[in-house]
Image (cartoon, rainbow, N blue to C red; front, side, top):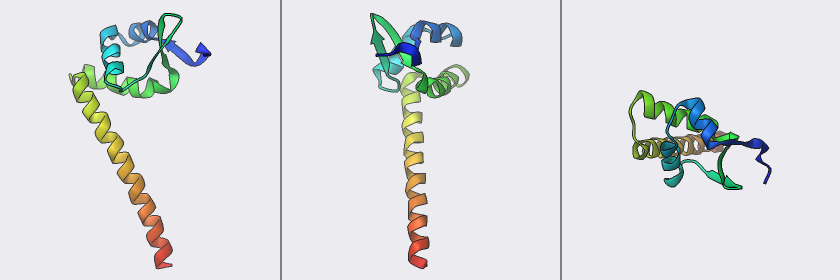
Length: 97
């Protein structure tokens, strides 16, 4: 596996000033994927945007990891419903002709 697109968890924790246990908890509940490469833990760079949101929720609003999980599940559901609404509107336009 090419680690070029991966960021070490330790670097992430230092940069964002978060505990490694917080990042591990996010991984344990499935909000992020932690990759182990040669006994070191890494996060893929594609996850950084979501991790930044999670860190802000945790630091600024004092939301625990379970709450973050709920927020992200609700946001995912909202996105799914918006996509469904978009498709329904497109279908309705076709039917109305």
